[in-house]
Length: 107
Length: 120
Image 1 (cartoon, each protein chain N blue to C red):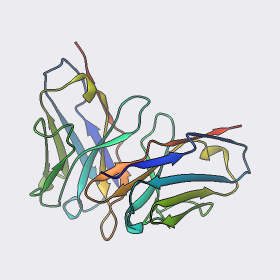
Image 2 (cartoon, chains in turn red, purple):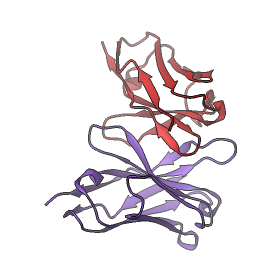
Image 3 (tube, each protein chain N blue to C red):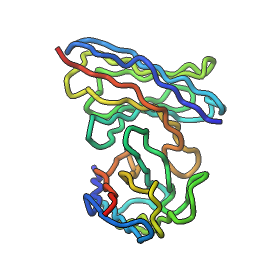
């Protein structure tokens, strides 16, 4: 079974800075099946990116996804206060698998 | 707009049963795969079960296989999860979500979740 490892576990940044979150798969993953979610405290996750780089409806363009093979990245340019949350990557091959999450906190 | 509303979560003793429901609106429910995903407090996300549009193909995580049953009623725009032989490790928020169509398997819309607590 594929394992997704997200890094760092916690990322401390200031509003206005750029955030780079990593998701590494233990085996090659189809780019079509790599997604990113944002979860704020007390809320359900929200889809940000699917197909590695396709923003979901209503997601601002400061969020972007990239990568291929086993290495994928979520980049948030110019952090806004509402972007501080936990981010999960997810892939699907024979079953859906989530990474353990990266907490993006205010420095 | 798309709305998913879960219900049925509760406090139950180990070995007990619960039936979760998810009421869908704002989209053509019968056109989408649906999934249940759970999250223990302070923990990550774990898929539980999903099924195809007609409810004829069902998939379960190993951790719930043989104990949980997923189903849907397309006439009533509803998704269900029958949970039997519950264990403490089943305690979590349970979310229903709509699976994207096409060449992707992302979870486009999520409900607000319903909490299941298994404790004596």
